[in-house]
Amino acid sequence: MKKSRQVEHVVSRRTAMAGVGATALSLGSWVHAQGTAGRIVMANGGGKLGDAYQSSILGPWSKSTGIEVVATNNNPAQLKAMVEQKNMQWDLMQGPAEGFAVYAKQGLFEPIDYAVVDKSKLLPDMAHEFFVMTDFVAYHIAWNTKNLKSRPPQTWAELFAVPGRIGLWKRPFQTLEVALLADGVPLNKLYPLDLDRAFASLTKIKPKLLLWDSGAQGAQFLIDGEVDAGAIWNGRVHEPKIAGAPVDFHFNQAILVSDAWAIPKGSPNKKRAMELLAYATTADAQAAFAKIIPYGPTNPGSLALLDDKTKANLPKLGSQTAMLSIDYWANNQAKAQERFDKWLLT
Image: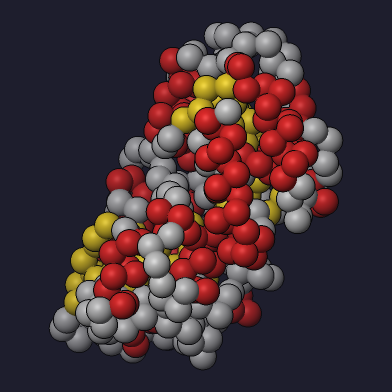
């Protein structure tokens, strides 16, 4: 396949969290390689997210099995090149689910062995043929508490009505969804996206928009007061808020997105990688992860292992949130991206 926007424009969502600690877990009956020497390579987003994976999932699994887990960067262009050259050097990969839906269509992943991965423990629609969704992340409304000392926006319509600067992600994913919500589209009627209506909604506020390229940049715009309010992922502002930064947020009308794990096509150690993926979906592993980064688990059994304070900070499926349609983006990403790029230039 030719190099495409579908590879170039899927950007990893990294989380700026602090305080990654060690976690001791029992791996249970489905660990089959205990004491076996060797290693597997996992490509992930790195940073604090990679640290959290290491502490809550990779490290405990490695300690129990004796199999070293080596982390590397999850570059999608490199994934495609290794598959095409039949020279796969990764065994496992993590990344945004909407991107993985595209890579699955391109034939870059192995099928998930659901005799090993227990999808019965997961929420509906989390287990796909070629990847498994492992968490919920909220793209939500946030604001600078010094700039907006009263009446912060409670809906996307109120956010778009803020007279000052507004920050949004410089990508069509999620940004088009919130533009439609701001224009009055109900949460349960978002898809298929009405692109004409979405871009008309964005155009109304274009003079006061400050578009950001990365989650770190978007969070800093809010914290520094360069924007009065905007959209951001919850992991980017959770820890700064606790640390006393002038930022606050809520989950009303949030768009929920997910990380996913998959086995790259031609994985040298597919069996062991599948076992590690299976462990990552257990209640114990997802609860340990949620204690480090406030992302909601896709295994609901995890909630019984978390205290009320931790659970209160986790994004959840419900009537006040909407799940990003990975099927829509798998089929319409190139078209939406092309139109978004043109809109940026007008």
